[in-house]
Amino acid sequence: MLENKDKTQRMVFTALFGALSCVATWVIRIPSPLGGYLNLGDGLVLLCGFCLGGWYGVSAAGIGSMMADFFGGYLHYMPATLLIKAFMAATAGVLYQVIRKGQKSRTLLAATVSGIVAELFMILGYYLFALIFLREGTAAALTIPGNAIQGCAGIVLGVALLKALQKAGVAD
Image 1: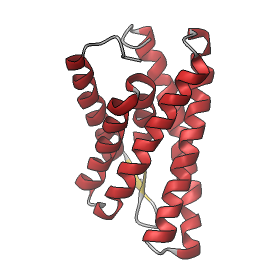
Image 2: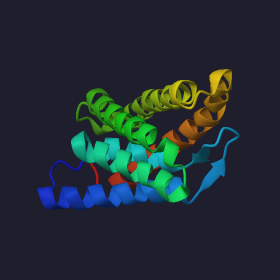
Image 3: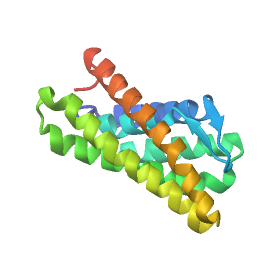
Image 4: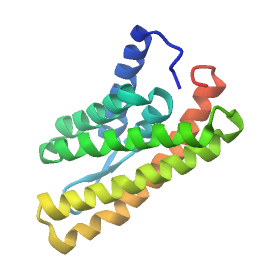
């Protein structure tokens, strides 16, 4: 985590991670049949939780991902994305710290397990959003495979980026 940084540095990292979450979500997107899209933003959302934690990680992940929906014209997804991605970052960050318990030898295990749990919440969140708010009915189940693929890619990307940042000495 970047907890040893002062408040200004944490705010800068929060803005940077939020912008990266937006770009990773918005730039590389594959439209899905129900009006959403697959993207690589989940890797950055998880990284927000792993590295920033707390309100910083939640803010960067939620706002950055929501802004991608705004820029991409998916305005109806903005509230759901804000909540789902913020919750993902919170879940990933808390579980990562609990599993790791300060031991660098547990980084891969902690990041992978917390990423899986966070991505399961994402899959469930978008399914419920499509079912309840978009009134997609049974077609909401069609969001599950695409979101599962996106989740797997997000875990791989998030863990790889975390390891790279640790190797560079930016994250512990």
